[in-house]
Length: 586
Image (tube, rainbow, N blue to C red):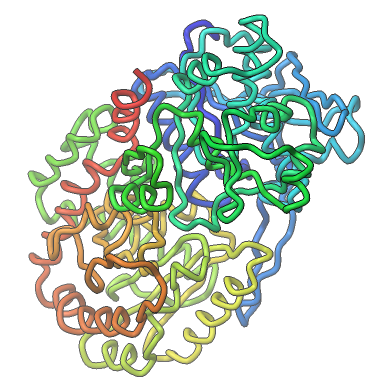
């Protein structure tokens, strides 16, 4: 019932079912896992997202690794229930009608968390406006700004229309939803019978809002030209009217709290932009990064703001493969309700753990061989790398020295590799990276078998992360805010082999939860030497990991046990949501 919900969670994307194309990558996967754990823990949450009828995209890869994209129109009525309530938002003087579609996430004890997807595809709206909620991360600044108005302002209004009147906290999963603060300011002003915003309204809104930032680089934060913001009208006038509250920093192009505020015409002439991150920072009482290191990086980027850190996690039951679910059910009853109990994996006999791993591996390789005809062998050490394709993630670092990699496979022990991941349709460098991986795969034949799985999604993600022997992660530090793929692998006893960045700075124990690549980095990415990382990667493969896998099963399984007992038991969204409750929601 609406009157028993006190926390509203806003996100631009969310992964709830592989058949619902409402996510593009880690941000959406985290949102889905967060809501699942909130349901498990019976936290009184309601969530809001956009519908994204056309989804992200369906990825096709040709024989050379050239990516092409096809729209995905998923069957909304098969998954969601249309709600009769309506809400409106004003965009450029037009009143857009919004409807909501409901999805219910059921927790382990049956507790339900509703997720509402906002939709403008109504006959009352113009043909163009009907498409505003269709595409995830599509279009230009105008399209994105419209979407963020719908999510933030429209989301609050829809919750009110649905009867959610007792909400005490509004959690913004990234800055896309920051306009919800503007609607809350409007509500406070109306409640006080005022037609302007003062300090009491600002403090009241700030007390309600929580902001989680996921981006470790300044360029990754949404910004919109102020003249475009002014053109939108509606409640965005408050952004322009609060002259004694916000200032625009000309050099940094940000909103800041306090200081002088020039009049709008002057601002527009100077090409200034609204930074959604600063809007959220200014109007939130609690702000956090998504790993300890990311918290440090965020405090450097936004030095005027107190920023805490809550390290991300994954939903344990969702990302544990069937063989390991059966193993845990036999030996650790109640692990779904209490993820911390996974530490008792240390009591499970080694032969049973290895058997579960081999079953997960065989299931994965059956999929790989069916899709790619790669002819992979379950007796060969298998390295996995699957995530969104972005250049900073350096998926091709493993191929920095093809001949050295080939020599390791020939002389130390056989290796096979599985890759997966989508590049954004406009990311030319990301697409080129996929082609280079395909070229490397051809160059390594016949010594190393490699497969690249097209159209990576959560269904495939669980099987890849849970079925390989080693999980490889090679981001260029300090660009990894958190990363969660290694956490998924850990739940299935798959040790990580990773750069010391993001969550791995907290989860790494050498030879016990996995292995590091390089040393922790204390400076920015400028002038970073990738060759040192590649040399360390090859050195550990050659001298430690491959020999251990083939000749010291006991030592390798120590890392498998450690991955589950140390990392699986802690780096989950059950622990993460509990931290949000204690630090931000209460």
